[in-house]
Length: 302
Image (cartoon, rainbow, N blue to C red; front, side):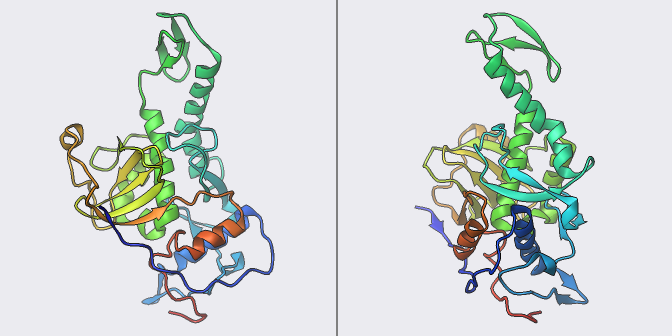
């Protein structure tokens, strides 16, 4: 049986006095998640207390590129994407990433999310007879299965969709300490370039379905972060302090990877309707961005 270490309970929650839109309150929560990790003048950044307010933060880092952005420079990112392109299923949470033609959201959408969405549309709408060939603007000439479904010759774009979705879900659970860690730099670079990372930096695997969608920060025996859907679809990433995955592709092929006796912190996916009260609820449970390591929220805290 796995030994699961639950996230530390967060401090007492104080209800808000006003209702805000999704972008505004997400900005406030992400800013609060970041400020505990900031260092200024040799001291920890001041914590403004909880609940956070968007006015407390002039800028917050984009979790994909790490660049500090004001709220007008950020856009809402769905994780997993709302187009149904990801193996992880429908959207669980909304996160803010860079806005604009050269921003992280727009760039990654063009590189692989939109091509996969278009491909999904063709699969549903364009049946072909067995053995037929068709020309695809994305993949070139492609083959067709006897059922009439398109068989793309290269699944790199689909892998990239799942990599980005899994990374953002892990960020939603573990926060900036994980997402902006040096050990995750190859993963962030791969997401932004649209290029599949090396196997020691990210792999997709299939575990038995157990009905649990979780992010697991594994300490023993395989030090890594696992983002697992309820059907067993999983992405394995490095963790803070472990820049490479601690197993080889051969071990994966042989089925030698097991978390049966793993010791880990396990955080449920923040599956919700993306309302502020939902974020408040998962805050209370200690399952949002950073509350596994954020303990004090008194004004003036350094």
